Length: 158
Image (cartoon, rainbow, N blue to C red; front, side, top):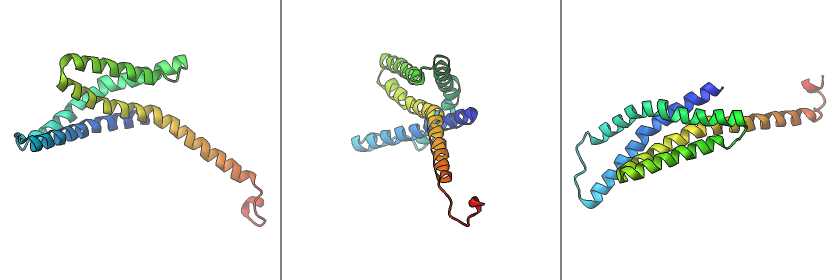
């Protein structure tokens, strides 16, 4: 089950890189339209999205996966349930600090790269908790319905 969560989280995180690039290009296009600036060539948007998709693969595998797995390992070994959140917060602080040192464009790129990180962590950690809660609720409801006395003549009363 944990492998499925990680694969699904990695897939969603990778898909979010081109999606955020498309949204960033749309924002740049709107700014260019408002200010009367040149919107760029006809291939600027597709190449920006393609570049984000290609860069998203190593970022997902080499950056996002170790951060999320490290947080989960710390949480399992120390039984500190906030370890994944602390790991993500620490990584986010490092990315923000580095981006501030590099400049405004790097800050925007860093902010857009945090979206896949949060989605990846939410799917891997949040889905396990949500799935457990849903399954336990269904199990409790099933026990409650079985605890009631069945109507006479039903198959369960035999």
